[in-house]
Image: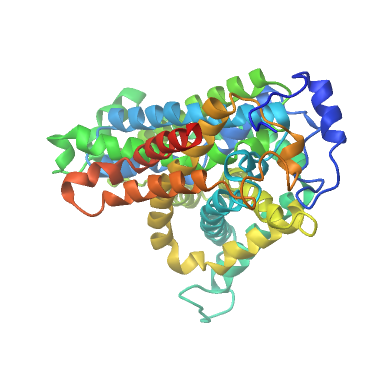
Length: 490
């Protein structure tokens, strides 16, 4: 059977009939089976809310800080964020198309290019980085809970006395465990609970961000005053003042890498979308507006802290803690606690737990479902000891995310050029079907993937090749895309 052969019909009704008629197989369970019409309940607002929830978080608020510290102006910092998001939107919409059309999650989608066994390689590559970020984000959320509970109840911070483990006390670990359990609740409750969480929290998060901006504008006497002082956040000397482009390109790459993981497993969500219009416009609306807006709020409010306190307070947890102390209002402390927890939770659930849950379930669909896969991923997020290795993991995960461009190059080429958007749904779940290749592995895909990664890493070997690593997502994606096309055409 030709793997690129079209379905008998492109109508949703007949696709659902075909999904219902899938034969029993070791490659299927109810959680990774194609979604039916009654499960496709995500409209444009739900998809946009998903991206609002993922974009509004502490790392986004502080994102421009790293760029400004590297020497970019605040205007160029926001431009890098917007440009990076616009670039990554292309593979996002392409891969999301497969999820919305066939109702399949990412590990199943990857079977078309890599084979039903080979698909474990990209799925687990994606899962590893997700588990790392899950541990880090859960620890950050726990720290926020711990700090703000300390404001409301000072005795909380002395819980456990002088006992310490890896530098942290009982209150830190209890806060971490509490936040971890909240995350696990939504895993157990399933995808509909995630949709509910993201949809309800989106307007709240945007409103709180705008409220913080309004407070800062009022306190310093106008938005113009804040923006006039924004360039003062830059270091006194920096290479970016003489070569802004040399700093801008790596940061655009970093921004693409920021969502590189989501650009792969976005079918995990769009398989529930009502239409292609809902997923495409919803993603553009949520991603291209919210993230630049929240990064701008971070820049503006931090500029105001220089005027008000004589120092730049980039971390919103520190700023909100200071405001709560100054006001002496428990209500403000509770509001700050809720905002930080919800912002971190919405990002963590959508970006860091759904993908590894599906990837782990795909390892053995007969025995592992979404819930068990999510619990395993959550446990791995704890076992990386995020409280001890936070800084190292962040640097490593950002680099690793860039290398995932090689995976994106293969699957986008396969879906757009080789399959032309047509997959044989039944054979994605069949051991001896069109995507069996040789022993379930498409060696062409693995060769192209490896070549893309190696080319990106070659940029670390010599200064003249540094651009390959600085633009790791681009170099890896271009090489894997081109080589895969050549190998498959042969």
